[in-house]
Structures are given as C-alpha cells and as structure tokens.
Image (tube, rainbow, N blue to C red; front, side, top):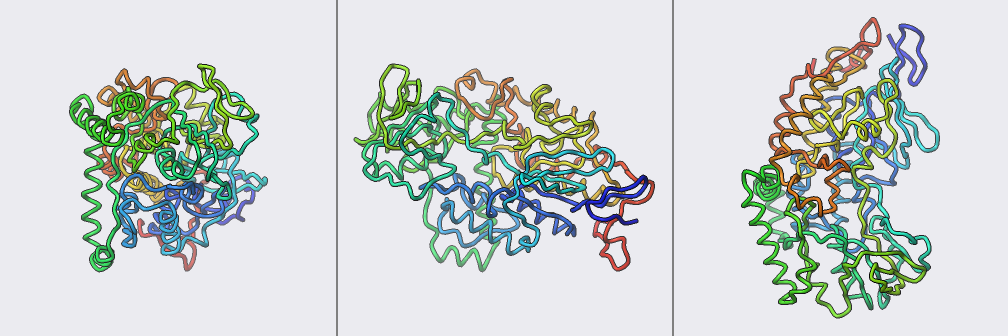
Amino acid sequence: MTGRKGAKGTKGAPVTPDHEVLVIGAGFAGIGAAIGLRRAGIEDFAVIDEQDGAGGSWNANTYPGIAVDITAFSYSFAFEPFPSWSRAFPAGAELKAYADHCVDKYGLRPHLRFGARVVRAVYDDAEHLWQVFLEDGTPVTARFVICATGWLTKPKAPAVEGLDRFKGDVVHTAAWDHSLELAGRSVGLIGTGASAIQLIPEIAPRVEHLHVYQRTPVWVFPKPDFTLPGAVRRLFRAAPWTQRAVRLVTDTATEVGFVIAMIHYRRFPFLVKAGEAASRLYLRSQVKGDRELMGRLLPAYRLGCKRPSFGKGYWRAFTRDNVRLVTEPIEEITGTGIRTADGEEQRFDVLVLATGFQTLENLPPFPTHGTGGRELREFWRTERFQSYEGTSVKGFPNLWFIVGPYSFTGGSWFGMIDYQVTHALRVIREARRRHATQAVVRPEKHDESFRRTLRRQPDTVFLHESCRRSNSYYFDERGDAPAVRPASTYEAAWRARHFDLDDYRYDHRYDHCYDHPYDRPGGRRDATR
C-alpha cells in the first residue's frame, strides 16, 4: 500500500504526507528534535524555520553584549559537550557557532528549509495528518509535527502610545541594527529585563546620555564569568568526562539555587531569602552607599516571581554621570522623546526597546486547529493553559511541543529539550510499532497530569502575594504560572522516560497497515521493532 506524496487519497487508500515528521523551528529545540529523529532511525523529516539560518534566538539576536546567562556547560546538549567555549558564559556568536556545529556534525543540513514562515496548521481528521501552510501559500503535510518554535521569537513593543510618532532612530534589541551609531548621542532605553542587563553596560560608556525607563526592577546576581584557559579546553577535548563532571556541578547548582528554591518555596523558604540577601549584598557593592538608587533598583517581590539574571556591570552603570534611572511611568512617546506621568519630557536621538518578547501569547506563533477544527490558543484562552507532561494537548493528535505550558523547569533549557524530545519520540516510535496513523493523549490522562500540576502550585513561590507586583511573563491573565513546570529537571526527565505509553490512544486510519519505508522490499527495519 503506497500513495503519492501529498496526494488526496480515495476511500481506503492512504494519503502519503510530504514528510513523516515535520519539525517547526530550527533553534536548539528544533535541532535537538532533528538529532533525536536521526538517532531513532527516522529519516523522513524536515525542519523548517522562518529565519535565514539555524540557532533560533542566537541567530536573530545580535545586540551588543549578548551572551548566555547560565554557564555554557549547562547550556548545551548533554550528548554533545563543546570543548571550545572561550568563556564560562560565552557571547551569542559562540552559541550560534555551536548550533551550526551540531547541524553539521549530525548531518541535518539536507533536512533544513529556511525562509519558511508558518502561518497556520490544520489537522486533517479524515487522513490523520497535519497540513502546515507557509506564508507563500505552500502547504506542507506531515503525519507528526514537533513544534519547536520557542518563546523568544516575536519581539514585543512597549504598550505605550506614540511610538510611531518618534522621529529619531528606533531599534529593538531583538532586531539590532549594527549600522546604528550611538556614540555621542542621547539614548532612551525602555526595559530592564535580561537584554537590558547585558546591553546597558556595553553602550553606557559610548553614549552622551542614557535614560533607562524601568517598570519593574529585577533580582540580579554577579556573573561568575571567566576565560577558559587553553589547557582546560585541551583537557576537555582529551577527556570529555571532565567537562561532563563540570556540567553535573553546574546543573546541580542551578537546580538547587533556582528550581528547588522556586518550586519548593513553602518547604525551603530560606533558599529564596538567602538568594535575596546575596543579591542585595551585590547591589550594595555596585551602587556603594547610594540608598535612594538602591531603593529604586531593589525588587519588591520574592526572588523567583520573575526571571532573575546574572549581570556584569549592570547596576554599576547607573552610578555613571551620563546614566539616569527613570522609574516614573511613561505617559507617551512624542515625536522627539518620552514624556512620563509627572509631565517631564526628555528629548532623545535614539530609542532602544529592550522590552523582550511575546511569550505565552506566542505559544504557538500561528493558529493551530486540532480535532474538529478547535483552535489551540482559543482552547487555552477559554480553558486555561494546560498540557500533558508539558508536551502534548488533548484534542491535538500527532503534535508535540518542545516548549509548551508547564514545560520549562527553570533549570537548563537543554534539559527541557532533552526530556520533551524523549517524550515525543517514545510516542512516535510506539505509533510506528503499532502501525498507527494517529497518536493522541487520552483526555483523562491529560486532565490528570494538569490536576497534578495545579496541586503543586501552592508549594511554589509563584503564589506568593508579592508576585502580583512582578509583571512577570511567567503568569497569564488568570494568575496561573504556565511558563514554569513545578518539578525539577530530573523529575521531568524521569517521567519522560517512564510515562505509560498507553496514556495515548493509537488509531488506524486505514483497514490495513500504515505504510512504513522499512516495510518495503529492501527497506530498513526500525530498531524499535
């Protein structure tokens, strides 16, 4: 039983999709999914991305000072340690190079298609396949889809009136213009999140004046960055286990310092308080006695309500004569500058928008219609953000997310990628083993997983009253915190390897077997069979 790729089938005859698996997104999540597919012996897949190269955020974001904000020992694939990092916290260009290294080493280039922006995905209930429509009108069909679009892809403009009226230069950190000259110019910068923490120390010495408009301060810790000596890099190459040992230390530190402190806050509140004390001490060392400035830079919410960050020279930048911190709310952007709620207006040559990204609103970044035409974002909007193990959603067959509601544990991004790829591949392999054309999580198992997640919420820091003042992207309009899974990375990884495969239902579109390439004469039999 065979069918022509992309052809409409007749009754009882299969429609062969363009690809068995389609991965949407070529950032590290998509790269990890593609490597997992190849390791599973699945070669009929494609990876599409709207950008012009692999790397996701690290391909798109190139603003001055951009760097990873956890050590590269943890911010990398566990199966592919990279001994050539120049620093413990390397710059963005090195992360982009690492993405290309992984693409080339694992032979992914033939599977990649760039400049392919997805505008809509529709599940075909009759044929058990996804129809993914690109911006140019091209449809791509696939039996299974792994959505690896991430969060940090759609820049968010400030919700301030008048931005379109400003007559000077405007640049967002996510779309940095390297031809833009800042030296000797007056700059207004909106935002004090992770991007601003890296950017401000870089541009403050170059500009004439820099006004930083802060809505909500952030907890910042000193960045223990250092150059990795050549001898250390040679050791990592000669004995890879040494780098894996370092990773174990950094992973554990991250889990204890952030994950356990946030997720088990009611049990270990002293961890959060100790972290806050350390951050205050760092603030005092940077600002050196300016109590008024310290008061404006100090968060009024518990550590963990909002993403904390490592900084190098961020707080100290505000002690410069040419840098001013503005905490008065912005009233409007005028043709020449910014007016705040107290009536004061500052004139600027350049506006820098360090206002981050759409996160939960960007999940996923295109309309996705599942069984019966139900649209995913509408489902989440009306029935709360929810998922099965942070990876799949009831009513949306053959679809898995690398970043879904309650997926990221707050530890290593790569730990999340690893466990979610493991989850998706276990189900895809099981569907192939059963010759099923559809795998969909059972509603009762999905709901059970969501209830388990909600039961854990009261133990987390996210329900602390002060979190309401944090303006954190962790939270949705209901007050839920679907951006973070209330579990350690180790627990999430264990569950991905051991959840019952019968938590999914496996259906057959045809009366006969689902046609696999390895079942044809001369085909390669999958290792799972």
